[in-house]
Image (cartoon, rainbow, N blue to C red; front, side, top):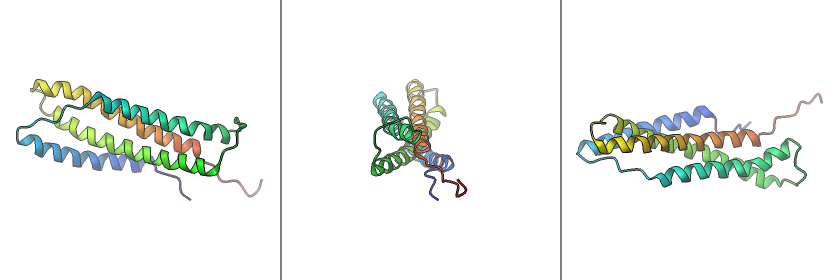
Length: 151
């Protein structure tokens, strides 16, 4: 039985992408360049995607809980599950990407430019983790437990 993307898989993706990001940015900054200054817009977009995923999963949750009188089309519910799985993996990968940059920036805080980047990257890691969490939550909202044959 398919249980969707599990938290352990999301954590593995975060760690693998984080290690690759750290290695890449350590090589790039070893030549004397800085990690690019991250945009606040990226954090806003990640948070917006998290809200979007949760918003699309809420009607499925309401229907499965018996609180909705509207008909739920199975194809729509399936699409919401796929969206939730994609959000989980995207959030995990983005968290790893920004965490790798954060580790490189944190290793040289003697540069004033890195001090500003540190906070921006920390916010981006948090926003990406929230996207992954929203995906995991949406998956759980869309889960239908198997019926007992005795009932």
